[in-house]
Structure formats: structure tokens, C-alpha cells
Length: 134
Image 1 (cartoon, rainbow, N blue to C red):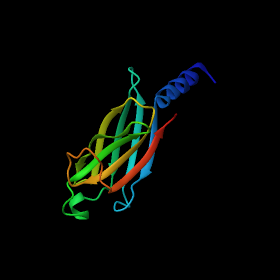
Image 2: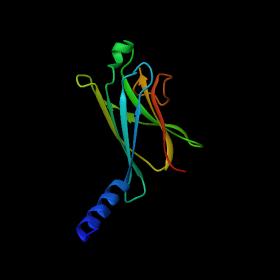
Image 3: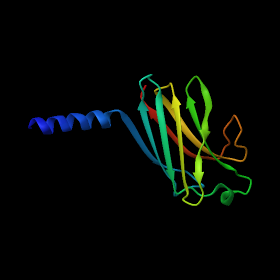
Image 4: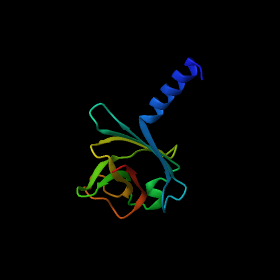
């Protein structure tokens, strides 16, 4: 391996080693939904979460009382906390969220909500995934 290839391989491993990507599909009633969650550790050791969702059904088509999608984080021993509302584009059927976490292992949930200001998730979970190590 010449020096150019070695440097390129080293840079590639550093860039790809800085983030973990998780791909998964949503659950009923959003059978066709897909999600990608990227987790990066920043300079202050916080995990920066970037979630991209595709093929999400408009909440009101599932149930007229539903207002939107909300993401939650569940950490053993710390309970469940709201990460935030998914920014949803009904025309493109895509959603996104950027958030942070101090924990290195946690479960991410996305729920359909009729009250977007609720402090607890509804039972309409469309996505659930444990991420991280620990």
C-alpha cells in the first residue's frame, strides 16, 4: 500500500469511525416507514442524534385525532424523556429530528400523538430501537 492509499484509508476510517448508523423499519400502522439514526459523539462527549424518516403516513390519515410524530428516549434507571417533535413534511412523507443525549446506550421510540405537548408517550409506537453500547 503506497502512502497516498494509506492516508486515504486512515482518513476514511476516522470519518466513518466517528458515527454509528442504525437503519430500521417502522411498526404498524406505518408498515412502509424507514428510518436512519446517526449517533456521533461530540467534543463534550454528548451523543448527537440525527434521525431521518421516510415513507411516513400522514398522522390524520391513520386517525383524525392524531397531530404528529414525537421522538422519545428511554434510559434504564432514568425513565423516558421527550427528545422532540419530528419535523414532518406531509407532501414528501419525510420527517427529521436532531437531538442530544448524555447516555451511550438508550432506546429511541417514535410515537403518533394527539397531544404534541404531552410529557409521556402514547401507546401508538411506530418505531423502537436500542442503540449504543454499554
